[in-house]
Image (cartoon, rainbow over all chains, first blue to last red; front, side, top):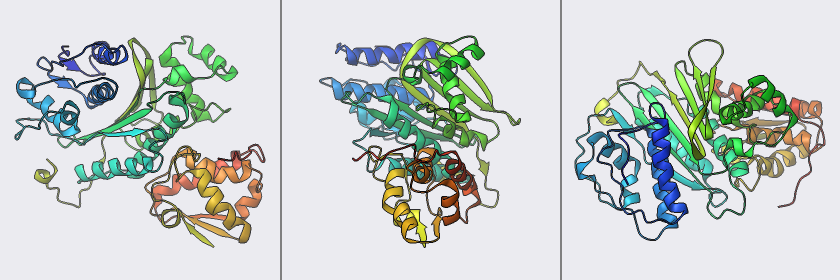
Length: 312
Length: 113
């Protein structure tokens, strides 16, 4: 199977979802998928990389055998991302001794958890990712408590709503990257569950929102869940913890939250004005699950000398 | 009486119910907070040292005292003091006040595990 030139939700969303959807389909239908061809892949975003890793991770667990891939002909920056995030271990291939990448981004190993099976240490895992981000972005003032608020509530939402109890596997994944040149932190959380639009209850307050939005596509549904959670009205369930995802965005001007779920995408931006800007759109292809991506620029600690060599 | 969540419970609490995890809001309420409130005139809950909080944990732990009919909101506010030396944690102090105010007295029943 060939991957497209760019795997990214910001610029090539439909092709990205199509390609990664095919990997999921192969696993679900137990189709023979032997080889992933990364040769044409020139750019991959952290969010798309986590979705790719999750698909291969699930494929490994549900299918006999292992996907093959050979990194010798890959783009160096793509190789660096996939190597650092732990993707090589998923493919069972050795890490290259040297990475010829030019990117200023450090990618942290992704973390996989499982609903209920992971009940003793899901909070610890969120803390572990937090610590790794703070260490990678050593010169930046990371609001760790707000990241923990978002991640722990994302895990709680998955635990309560994403998966029916009859599903054998109920995984979630999280991943982070720090671009030292742009001082940009990216954190991604993902599940393969029933999606936010798919789990919204039929509820009269939702109907009122439906009238307000005019269009009732999956993007509008995600936005409605977020807005109902913010107003705190009723007992919506899935929407209740969603406002926690906004805390890290509120604290950083120029930051962004993106949620993809089924055929909807919600983007929330902090442009430095008083109100957050919310944009919801409908996607041509569906994501079977929910992906949450935070991007923010932390303040730099000016009173410390940052050893960039140590960071990279 | 002083209760430190980080020292006496967990420095990474999360989740609402025991099905989420051991260090959830319900376990904190049932194992530490409510017993402390029952046997003391004043309980100071110290938030320092914790990685952070999600709203599910805080709502279940503190709003749950009212929602489960243990105390009314005003009774709880009289007995409970939330303490932190971390200015970043002020949002959690405000959230706890809000969850106590918003909780409907006796609206929930504890489901045995």
